[in-house]
Length: 64
Image (tube, rainbow, N blue to C red; front, side, top):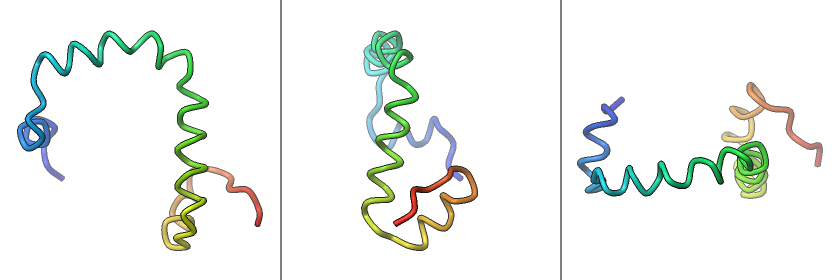
């Protein structure tokens, strides 16, 4: 796995970007559970059985 520093370099992620994200933290913190749930639902809705099988190790997926 690549280091986070290398990933940031690849995407030209600057200190100013980091500061912007830090400013969003209070907003995101309040909604973290719903954000994660929405991302999981989106991933499941894509219907990739291989990914869904991997997800089952970490979360309870809704039955079809």
